[in-house]
Amino acid sequence: MGWRIEGAQLTARKCVITVAPHTSNWDFVIGFIASRAFDLPFPHWIGKESLFRGPMGPVMRAIGGIPVDRSAAANVVEQVAAEFAKRDHFIIGVTPEGTRGRTEYWKTGFYYIASRAQVPIIMGSMDYARKVVTFAPEFLPSGDIEVDFERIRAFYTGVTGRNSSKIGAIQIRPRLDPVAPAPTEEQRDEPEHD
Image 1 (cartoon, rainbow, N blue to C red):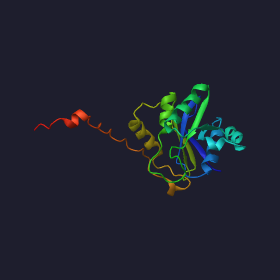
Image 2: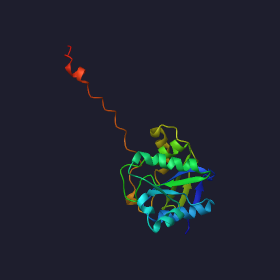
Image 3: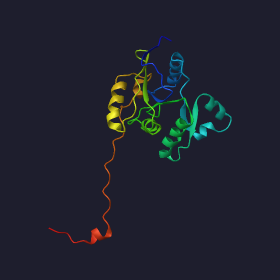
């Protein structure tokens, strides 16, 4: 296929690998080939529980799928962190865009999973223009997502996906300022002082 692999040698027994940009189903094929080249098991991935029901359930698990209940979104981080705690060797691959289509913001679950599980993040990219799969050295989340995301953005800036028109901005949703609490009944009844 003419692809080459560059960057850090993957040695972590537990980690979250981010893979971007994700613009094509071909990313799965390229990712599988890259995992074989590094002599790694193909990373696990997370999917909604419904994908694992019926006759396809065993197939999805065999190719690394981990079912999660997405009805309680905040709980997905805990569910995946629990998988890390159960295993001696667990690598999970995540596409931070959450879709092959263009998106305005990256999802941050990968960051909070790594932080909660206390495992490193390894950034991986597939640059179709250069036909290069690159892995960055692992890093542990600092707890300050804005600071860590600058490092993430720097790594992925300029990487070309298979369908470059589907590549969105490399950014996370801005945090909302906390809303001031509503005044108590006593505060509302107090006269204003000039």
